[in-house]
Image (cartoon, rainbow, N blue to C red; front, side, top):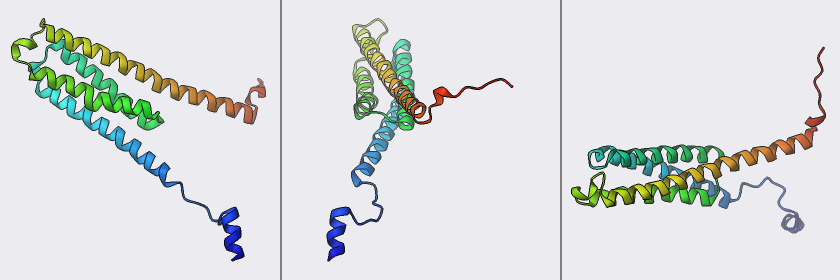
Length: 169
């Protein structure tokens, strides 16, 4: 009975497993990034299959944005990212880009000409998406470089690396 009282006050003394919420968050993050990567692969395949129906400049824009987002998915998986960044990355990969392509392909062929108003609108949408992807890339990379700078300052403070001098023999 006394051990139960002390155990409830001070813990059981045995090492505890990580909180289940942390494991779920980690798995959700992995699932989000995996889903974004799969959506980008699906989009790239759909784009290749319908390449003749998309003007060259739009095809190039789609491919460029897809490549940028694919690199971001990989980078976000390696170094981590905020939930806001992952949500935006997933939305762009699985919703915004594929919806733009599907909507454009649903138009009659005459509306998909290189100089049509619909094509100009698509190119404007793709320019906004590219700008957003570039901004997201900067945020993810700045977040990792800021994190490295903070870690470097911590190491410098902890080990006082600034006072070490190497002298020539």
